[in-house]
Length: 630
Image (cartoon, one colour):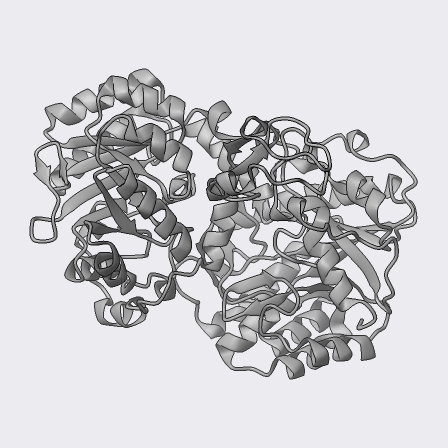
């Protein structure tokens, strides 16, 4: 494959792409600086990204009050950081003057049309579009080479797209990648490069999002003939990609190579989608949406459907499969389509039998609809920071017969992650201020849920670090900072519930290190000192027990008397959370018995990841599995 005058081959010089993406943060001068720095470090190519938001996202996703929390975050940044078409044209000219290849990833067809006017020499498709055969077909008409990343896709999906590309006789290469930012070393799986090379006999490269450079260098050693890494002027800038990017000096880094390589090599078995990728797949990939109302019994026709982001429904690869099939559920215009729309729908019961008070997770925009389907004892609002400024009466009417709980957001305006334990005073003060807004909103909700007395507020309190766990001797200091933060809050009439945490939380689709609220003895000590109960997330504690080699049953029994509310979902490994009940590795038979036997007024929700999709289908499945066992 040849891009400009550069021949990409396994026995030639590696083609190095400096992925600028959106790391210019919408500032043209930043983009120029990044091109200059890319030239200095010896990259062969600079690459940007272009989007037409109305073409790319569904109307509902662009509605900031109805979109998922993570989708809201993504869309806001994309709008904020987009450059003008004139900027892109000038950048392409500047790159040519600097004798570096200019490329740009189009996320939609309108962007392809614009880039054709710039006359880019080749196209790079993001992982989110590996399954988007419509866009690939549109690009094929340009007759230009394509490079496609394989992140967020399964082995079967890669196979489908490769066959399609070969059928179209498109000149293409694949980049092995894991689409989490930054990627944990255990998920990099560099041996998969061998599989791609052997299976498809095409140019194969590597797009890295890991910390440091060791694995990128190892990828070259394993035969990657294209390397793509994100570049930034400052890793602390606002935006999702900076943390996983390399600054200029880090292109020379060779630290901790042996240990990182031991973890990174992985296997050459069929590719599986990691937990972090599942999160990002929902936000960034595309799915099939209805372009008009589809009635029960109607057969799907091509003019009834379209491919849009986000990827909440069926993959675009199902487009040809569902055409001609009859739907068994009514599908409204603008809604994502699911496989369950062609099968028997899971219908919730109006009431379930539990010893504990049962609740369901809700968002402002879906609470009214979900409460038409079932009658829980409580609803747990999963808030975004945008929700805190909403007019509640727009979504709710007073005198709801159930009670309410609020799950505080972790993410606030300008990429502020709630950290009530921070040693940075100004950062901690801002966290306190943001949590106070949550408390105030919780109290305002009392008007709509008058049965509620002292509503619970579930809080992920902070105590995370970016690159490593901090020294165990520092933990008391951070717990004390947290207690001090709580004292500064006006939370009268509410009940603050810190939540236990998993060792590797996902923030912005990338992994962090958690330091507090994992050890059961520390949780008990904190609860006694602060006189606060906690929310026990069963999924989180299972992953902590797996990592630290603790007994999960003993853990659950030990902290039971300090628990006021439970989040219940399955889990696996050290970062596979929110799995449907029975699909992970938790011993639910004995865990649920411990919870039930220690009952003293606690409540719970089934916290299944993306359980709200398809009118709460994931929650109804979980409640059915849990009924009469809690």
